[in-house]
Length: 80
Image (cartoon, rainbow, N blue to C red; front, top):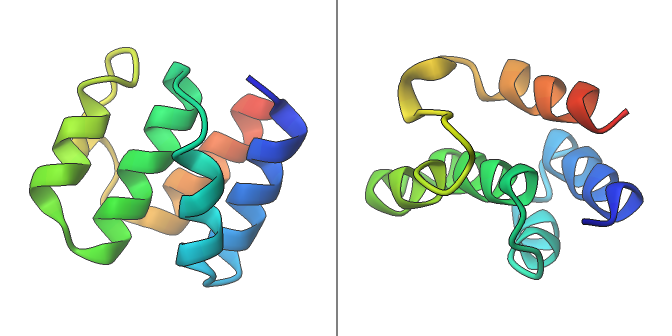
């Protein structure tokens, strides 16, 4: 995992650039990148794909956060 790259992806997502963030997240396969990938699909409205990535994110679930901004901030905190 490259924390700096994933932090950039989180910042992009927080700024509303889902596509650029997604391009970064899909290049990594660790649990934090998978969590970010799951949130990005949640933002996109792709529930099935989001749940797929949550299942690969070390115990996190789609229902854990109702607010994606809060969840992105939690990912950011976990990388800092």
